[in-house]
Image (cartoon, rainbow, N blue to C red; front, side, top):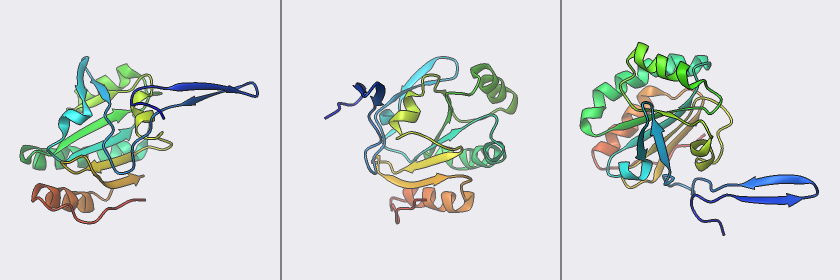
Length: 171
């Protein structure tokens, strides 16, 4: 059994295999993240409100089209306790991510995941964007690889804010 935050190296037949903790089925991983400008925060500390986590890259065309839609959603529902966290992929250049956040005025926290620790905590991210919506209790209610349907996402968030979780969605 692996404990949260630990990794195990196995050497088998000359290969090294890294086993890392993954997202528990349907639950928000307990992982600390570093927001641009070196502010640390824990995702589990955001329980109590809907949380949308999106993995993205500055080189992802779909991500760049989706970003202003998420900013608009955040400006609309953030005051109602929605939190959005954008996790820049480990291969993205940190200065490029920070420059984009400042230049575009991204209103929600942007996380630098230089060591891919957050990616691993979410089970490994293979494509961008990959997004997750968690209910206030940390239960996963939405997962999407590729562009999110912003109106569907908005409706799911409104249900969470109203205190009803609706049906799980996944792709």
